[in-house]
Image (cartoon, rainbow, N blue to C red; front, side, top):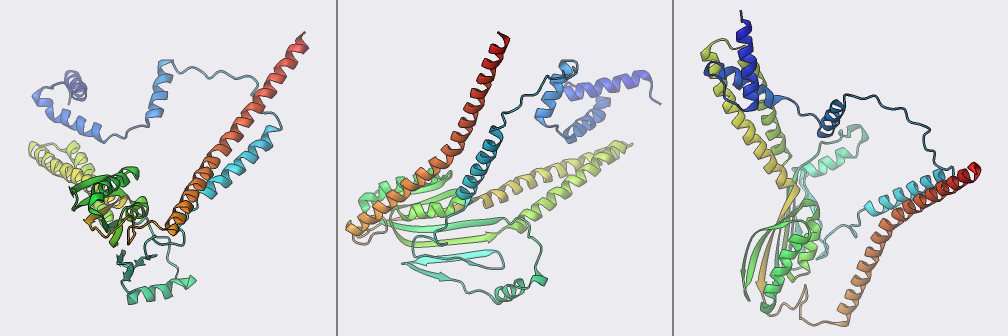
Length: 380
């Protein structure tokens, strides 16, 4: 049975271990157990912890009863409803994707989705070659058309996407084209993983861009030079994510069990064996976390391999003879008008709700000022 002196020493050892101070050798096991238990404790929300500390510092004061609540003028309620409706319409209108018919600019390529989670599209010299659908695709399409055989909603899928593009431009434009390739990665929130450039001859780039901006990256890269080859691929890696998550969950469960066994251990051999296993499991958890981050990063970013080739006959972006015809001028003018209209539409979508909010604030302030003047006149 523990004496009061023993209990006092153990409590002091716990405080020292949690504070990072050394403890007596005979209490090292208790200190290590306290640190392991502390690492497993749940972390409270920072905002809740801060508010609780502030209330404790003030001695948990009672909330004072407020006076008469401020009431909005009657005419502002319909205005608020109208503003909310307009804002909802604007958000819905701006969030609808505009795919322009679904497909890339060059050659109107399409993607063939397979049941095994892979997508392959190959473009070369303006032609598109797609893998024919398998027999399982046809059977799956027939089965999915039946309401009775409708499958439940599938879980979130993780897809790794990649692309390769070969561009040709004149030798004197190689340096400028290389700068544009780097600018595309920077503008879209990506980065250049590797690059090799030879002035006047060509170069290679390995870009990483956000997965949702892969098509925009390919469109902008296709405008830099003449597209000689373009390839896209996608691979479903959901199985890898599920496998890593399962291993991480199992390792965490095992660590919880080992901690409970360590708390109940009575002999030195049991304690030593459990600690050794805990170290192994901790390394497994760290490795699983790193692997999970890596797999998710593969799904959230896409790799784009860009090859620049020098060709004296490649004149300009996707051009064949290097001449600027009236048709090209007309296309450029249309593109400028399209971009201008898009900018104006976005600016209007942002300015309209802000203007309505400002109008409501001004009307409320004006009516409040009018009421203050009326109260001042009544007091006189």
